[in-house]
Every structure is written in structure tokens, then in C-alpha cells.
Length: 453
Ligand SMILES: [Zn+2]
Image (cartoon, rainbow, N blue to C red; front, side):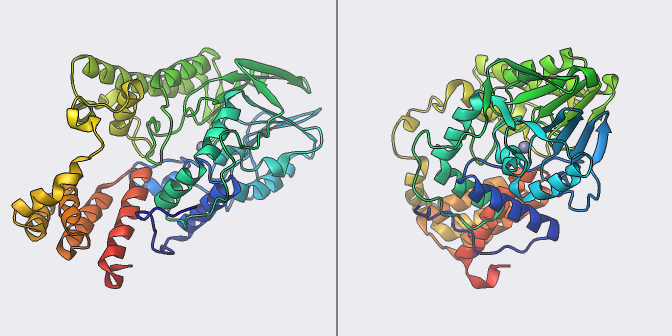
């Protein structure tokens, strides 16, 4: 592959041990899955004040957690669940390759019965990455039919996602090798279903239901005798990532709403997300899932209302806020990105500005504007003032102008670095932080060795 000139993370980044483990896991995921759209950072024990606590790797877990009758949980970047029956066991999600051996060890300590089924709640790398660790002769692997197209999509855009993932997670860019074409993914599942797939094992019924949300192939596993619903990534302790910065197809808000309603209608007594802890008790489940559904529906409806009223996407990104009773946190997904995701998911990119119909972006005229304004030094000084005034986003726009006129201009780079550092200081969202740190590394690299830390 050819490296994009703009994406050259400057070598190893110093990280805490837990972060280091995460980055390794992600690297394994990216490489192991052909650079596909991969792991979503996990959301375990989310703490809105510190995005890094979203990630609980479970390295110190000594014993699988018995979370319900016959249900065991291994914690990792994402959870692996095992349902034990007298006729063999069912694995629900397999986490990352990096976690799989440890998860297998923990769960096999509880039951050594044959693995009769693996159910994949969706095709992201942090759910399918450990399949090889669990698959036995005769194991059936179940997924929703869209799994195949989603895997092909991830592999089709493998080089694109490899660069994006490397940027967001501070990894070296892997070499994905020759493109396998439009339909080149290896499809592991042996059973693909449309709306519902039911099987019986050891006296338990497993209903695997289509519940599109974070991905089109998202599935929920419902075990009526246990009143247990395994919901994959359709619920975690943050507003959902309706648009993710590393790139995604639209994640339709109304699909999430319908899928959450489908789970609520089952009246579960335990809900098991693939990231974070299970929710126990019918009343608490109803409270949390209803609030989550209402928060998504509110953001969707306010966006649609604003679109119909003629408001543009920027205005709506600023205006749409959740009422206090629907606050679910933004440690992983962000409202403003979700608003834009909904807006552009519905109508695409044209914003009524006729200039955007043509191939020249606004930045093509920045050098002339900068010259008229007195040169890059003047613009850099203005950017520094904006930083001092607590307006780092304005400073970022200004430094982009100055650097378009004079790439490598030291004053503009310094102001840009400061703006990025202010934003990182304010940041409480794990995805946003990844991209700010990427831009900080790029800016330091442009400034030269003295500023690289
Ligand atoms: Zn996930």
C-alpha cells in the first residue's frame, strides 16, 4: 500500500501499561483481520470523567464471572459469554484474538463440554477476533445474514481503515497486502439468518434475533428460560457512536430505537452487553433501556425537526442537547457527531453552497487570503490570541489557513499545537482524544525533534 502523506504517526508513543495493552490488541485486530474496520474501544465501567476507564482489559481476572444461571462472563476488550447446557456449550462473541486464549482458559475452567455453537452479535473485530480459539469440529457459527456484506465492506476498504485505525490508535500503519477485491472476506459463520434463528440445546432455547444498530448485522441472543438477552453493542454506558470518526456507513438512529424496543418487549431479567457489565432486574433494565432509546429518539427527532425547519448541519450540531432526564454521557459517542451522522446519513453532503458542487475546496484560496491579511505571521498571532481567549477551534481554522500559505511555519504550528492541547485537556470522549493525539503527533513532527515527546 502507499502511505498517505498526511498519516505518518511518529513512531512509538509513550503510553501507560493499560493503554499499551489496548494498542497491542488493536494492532493484532487490524493485522489479523486484514485491516478491516475493527475494534470499537470497549466501554466497561464507564466513567465520563476519564475516557480511559472505558477500557477494562480484565487482565487480572482469575475466574470467570457467573452472571446468571448457566451463564459465565470473561472480561476483556470485549466480553466473551458462555452458556452451559448438559448437551454442550454456546459461546456468544469471542472478543479480540489477543483476549481469546485467556477467555478460553477462564471459561473452560467452568465447563469442558463441547462448543456446539458460537453466536456472533456482529462482525466487528472485537467480537469475531477469537473465533479460531473456540471453533471445534462440528461447531456451528451463527450470524445475521448482513454479516457477510459487512465483512466484505471492511475488507474492501481495508487500506483506508488501516490508515484511519493507525491514526486514531497511534499504531504503525500495517501493510495489508494486495486488495482481495469487492467480495474477498473470509466468511466464518455456517448459519446466516434473516429475522430469527432458533435452536435448542440441552433443554434451553436460543433465539437469535436481527436487531440492527451499531452495524446492520447486529443480533441479540434471547434465552427465554433464563430471561437473558445478549445485546452485543446496541447498548453501552454512553450515548451510542451513531457516527464514528474512523469512518462508518450510516448507523440509522431509528434502527437502534426499534432494536431496543424489540429487546424491551422480551421483558428480560438480565441484559448482557458485549462491553461493560450485565444489567440485572426487570425494573432496572426497563429504566436504562427506555432512557437509552428515548435519548437516541430525541436526538433523531430534533435533528429531523431542524432539517425540516431549514437549519444547517452546523447549527444543529450546536443546538441539539439532551434534556437532563435523558443524559446518558458522551464518553464514547458524541451528540454533535451523531447529529451530523443523522443529517448526512439521510441526505448526503450537499450543503446548498454552490461552491461545494465543484472540485476546489475553500482551502484552495487560503494562501491569497493569508497574503492579503499580512502573511502567516499575522494569522498565527491571531490564532494565538484565540487560544488565549479559550477559542481553540477558531485557532485550528486560522492555523489551517496560515499553514496552507506557508507549510511548516513555526508560529502557526506552535499555535496549532497549543489549540490541540487545550482541546485534549477539555476532552472527555475516548474517540475524540485519539484524533487529537494523532494531530498533536503530526504537529510535533512538523515542528521538529525538540517538540516530540
Ligand atoms: Zn464492540
